[in-house]
Length: 219
Image (cartoon, rainbow, N blue to C red; front, top):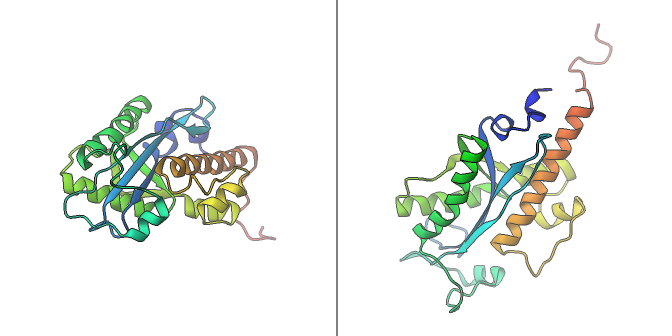
C-alpha cells in the first residue's frame, strides 16, 4: 500500500486535492432557475499520522438572486423563512467570497492544488455552486469544476446505507431530524461520515495485506 496513507501531508493523500465538505439549501431542485438560499463549507484537516478530521465550518444565508424561483415545498422541507428580518443573508457574490476564503486559506496551508467538493449527492451541491459562480462571474472559485467525492457511494459501500441520516446512525452517531436540512448541520454530519469511512479504510489498508488477485489454486 502506498505511503500516501501515512505521510501526514494532505497534498499527498488525495492527489493534490483538498476535500471540502459542502452542503447547500435551495429553493428547489433545478440549479438553473431555483435560488441558492444557504451554503456551508468544511475543509478537511489531517493529523500527523495521516488520519483526517473535520475542520471549521463556515456558512452563510444567501439572498435569492434576481429572477430566481422558490418552490414553497422546498421551504417546507428546509424551514427557511426567506423574509425573516434577522436572517442575515448575503448577496450571492458576497456569500461565495465568504465561504471561498477559508477554503483558499486551507489550500495554502496544506499546499494543495485545488479543493474537491465532498457532498451527500455531491452533483446537486456542485450544480448549485457552479451556477452561482457562473451568475456572479466569480474568477476565484477554488473547487474543481466537475470532480467530486460523494458520500452516498462511500456510505453505500461501507455501511450499506445511502440516506444521510441512516448512514450517520450506522456509524454510531446521533441524528436530529429537527436540525436536518440546515446547511451547517448536514455539513457537520457529512464531514463526520466522510472522515469515519476514510479513516476506517485507511486503518484496514495499513493493517491488512491486500487479497491476492490470482484465482484460488493458481500456481
